[in-house]
Length: 426
Image (cartoon, rainbow, N blue to C red; front, side, top):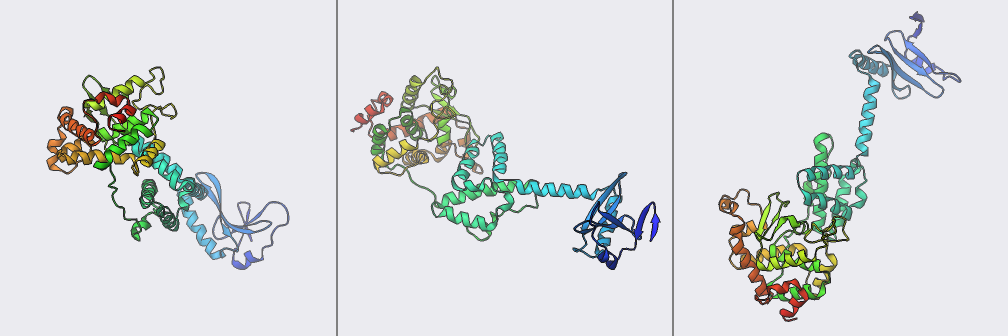
């Protein structure tokens, strides 16, 4: 036993440490090693722990290596030498350990909802409003209990189980749900490359469902029953005109829902969609039939209500002020007409009718704002303006009126759809 700088030091070996008695009162007692400066064993009331105490950046730092029953003296001394090397370099092992614990805690506390909110902000900044709205709705509908789950708790087994479970009701919904989750986790991996994406198991095991393209549309012989159901079964005039507008224009549901009066030009007989799925603005011509429909809505608007006055298809019930989801009206039409249509099927019907009257494929692509990247021939299509589309739009509208058996001399009757129903033989 010697004395060095008022510290009592000992020859720490296994026998010495094992024989040290636990203290019964007071603070822990430290026995420092005579060979490796700062290395020692701290003896408390319940356990003995190996420690290393040295200065780091002129401040005394004590690091706990391990409990005496966890590792041997020789192993503890080896660990102490490694720590000593770090401390001489100015690193505080306690601070490093604390940072690692905090990082692990943050990693474990990151939820799917947190990643979703981050991704929505990114999508909104890029103008991807469709995805920023559909992502939360899809996850809330199919995996609501996952949103507040820790990302670290989402395993491959859970992915397989829930993908199969959702697929029992809708294979397309199962695939869509997990494509969204895959996108969120891939975004998370950019800043956390050590994280894995459990959704990859669906690709590795080839578990993605094979989806068939939906081909439902209003067939020619169904056109008259459909317009009759629209005119007689839907009480809300905004809902009626909205669905007829979708059919007459081929617009996507959200593009029409968010149409504002600022985007409608009655003088130039056109309207412009600023925010589209492919981020390319779309300007379309009005036919007389579409103009009559829009003027009817203009005359109906509540000019004094700031919430709804700006929207072509307003709704006093929605938070946004514009129409959001005419589910009941669509269900009433389907029930009466014996159909199973969705809103997007009206867009598909528009394309089908345009194709049936031999409208150029590139003109149709322009009308519905389909992307044509990589198509060299589409160079001509890309330079078409609203006037180039006016005649094709009239042809499509006239064909739709013919299929609905609407007398072309009664365009003004679109202002009152119940009267329109009488005009077509209801």
